[in-house]
Each structure stands twice: as structure tokens, then as C-alpha cells.
Image 1 (tube, rainbow, N blue to C red):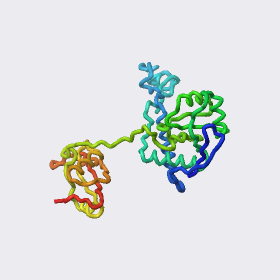
Image 2 (cartoon, one colour):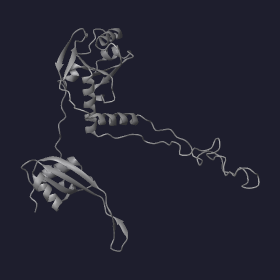
Image 3 (cartoon, rainbow, N blue to C red):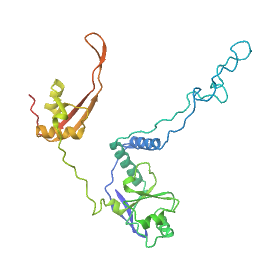
Image 4 (cartoon, rainbow, N blue to C red):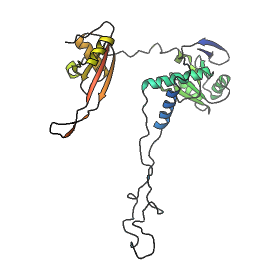
Length: 304
């Protein structure tokens, strides 16, 4: 996908091909909706509260006798029907936060970038390096790129001069690349350094080798008709694992024990089913945890 690249003073521009995700049809739109809803829900404090009739002070004495006054019967002056009484089904403090899986966030972010790029709302500038730390000069550069509307400038990271020059512009927001998310639906200006990827002094995170005790991870390997079909047809093996096991420890335990290469691990948490004891008492079976391990093509675990 082609994007416009502006010089540092935004007087000249050219087009260059960038490797941005491409989507067809409505793919990713539902993910965008879920991420935006979760982002707004997570911003809610959830602290609003009302008092029920039992929490309002007073009202412990019956206002008047049940019979003989000619008035409607009443048991407390804090009834929800009375002024100053409690509230029925009123709001209470609660947690509005929503969890979104990492793959859904990635899909939504890619779709948002694709839509912005298709609409021509993404521009790239070589660098934000004003000759002088002046808000006026920064405003002139941004006006040449985006004359109207709100602008989101992304860099990784910003220089002190650029931050000082742009922080007093009403329609401009600065955002570090590491904190960029889907709901930032404004016009984007990306620094070319951010588009080119990590800088020279950046060291990629290396995966550490972990030594574990396989006996504390794997219980048994399941030998059933269904598991035998999975192993013979798809190279998938089912293990009973301990509750504290996760994908990384299961992968390491299987590779360490059977000398094979694991390509994928799926974890299943199984709730115990209600049963009856021999005496007829209702009981619940204990919860269990299983791991379905997929091996590299050609690798095999001998089942005996």
C-alpha cells in the first residue's frame, strides 16, 4: 500500500510502498467494535452507588399504628415510596472491565490502520526535528500536511524539542508508538523512523531456555479411541496435566521427555461432572486439565 512521505518541513512529498495489512470485505470490523467497546468500558470507574432502605439512616420505628388512624399502613419512613427513602434496584459499585484476546486486538488494529490508509488519513514524515523549539513552526508543518481536523502524531520515541513544540497545539495529540491502540481514530502522521522498525541499538528479546521437571507437569498420556485417531491422522497427542501447567511448560516437558519438536499446544480446563457415590450420595468429580500437543511432521511418540 502506498503512503505519502513528507520531508521534515513538509514542503515536498513523494509516495512509497509500505507493508501494511490488507483486508477484504467486513473482515476485522467486529474485532474493531469489540476493542472499542472494551476500551470505553475499561475507562469507566464504576463507583456510582445508591442506598437501599436498609442502608438509609433512620426508619427503625413504625410511624403510626397499623389500624385506627385512617391512614395508609406504613412500617418505615425509609420505604422506597417515601421521599428520602431507599432506592429499589439502584446502581451499586461494579467492575465494567472487559477482556480482549491479543489476536483480536492485533486484528482490530490492523483493520483500523487499513481503513485509515485507504481513506488517505495516514501520512509519513521523515522526522520531527524542528530547527527551533517553536510552536508556530510546528503548527505550520502540520498545517501543510493536514490543514483541518484533529491530528495524531506517532513516533518512537519523541524528542524533547518535538514534544515542547507540539504540546500547546489544540488539535494535535502526541502518542508513543508502543502505546498506540485501535480507538485512536484520528488522522495519523507517522515518523519514518517508526515505520522502518527498531533502531540500531534495539536488542530483540530472546527466548530463554527453561529447565523443568516433567513429572510435575505431565500426569499421563490418554489412550482412547479418539486420541488414537488424533495421533495417527493429525500427529496430535492428549495428555493429562497438573493444574499449574501452561502451554510453555507443557511444550518444554514433552520435548524434554520424548525428544520431539512441538508446534502447538492447546489447553483444556474440564469442570468435574456431578455423580453419585456407591451409597447414593450426590458428589462432584474433581476438575481436570488436558493438553492437546501437535508435533512437527515426521515426529512420533511411541504409545505402548
